[in-house]
Length: 407
Image (cartoon, rainbow, N blue to C red; front, side):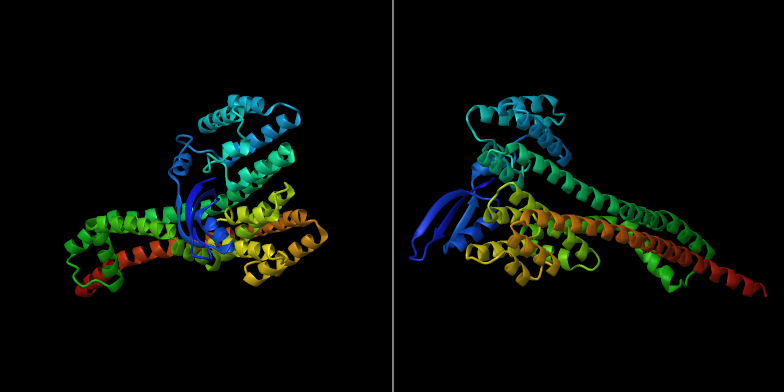
């Protein structure tokens, strides 16, 4: 978990510096504000930045972490010591980066460090949820159960991501092929016909042909402008999204966008329910669980709503009331959470909500894929058809003029 150095001002105006670990700068700022403090400055410490890049090159996949957790849980449940478990896991790990990290974890644990504390050195590999569940398992003496829940959570998350990727693969391939065909026709085929038109003495071109010729000339002679413009747009977009305003704007668009907005909303709700249910089932206090969830839902708008609910719960409210007021959570979700809270079975109720929305995501992806396929085919047909018609219109005028002259 990153470490931040902060400076705040209390109600009397006194400036108070400090250093604390937090999931993110935004969550730390909210936490300090809830305590009645005015934030002056927050900066991530250099030590934390060095930790963020620890572990070398490469990446650790969710599947690797899932297998790691399941094997770890099995050995812990069998009574194998923590250090011995890490040694075995390091030996059989096929991921070089994960192997180096496990070796470092083993050295830290042998030196007397807690496992969760050692894992916090690698925030790019072990998320806040991961570390929070491990810490809860260590404190409650049920580390094997926490690891088992982590493995199930990672498998569910990986399955959801795989379904989204597989559903988007075919439309992306069709789009790439369509763009490639259009570029091929415009940059290679059309110039040959333009030379033919010149040889035939064509001077007056139809409007579609003029548009296509202008586009072809632009691509063949000033292609670098489009390339530079595309690169500049991507860089500007990335820089904008990294800002607080840009991130919030982008996340709001993702929730409100036509067609894809509902899908993104369902994915966020499924992740929220699954994450919160897993944390509560592992014994994590609800305030800490909500703070962790806010850092893992990958949407600033929903994260703000979760943190607002956390603030209201601290003041004695039930969790369902603030979620209902923010209007980001459907009535069904709010009612099921309220029923679960009243009956003392909030975590299994959240698991049911997560299952429901994961099924909703499956259905939405299936319908979206079936709708996108004909749209992409029609787009490709219209683009190619426009090019073909634009090419043949001058030929038709030439043939017509030759036929008229012969008559």
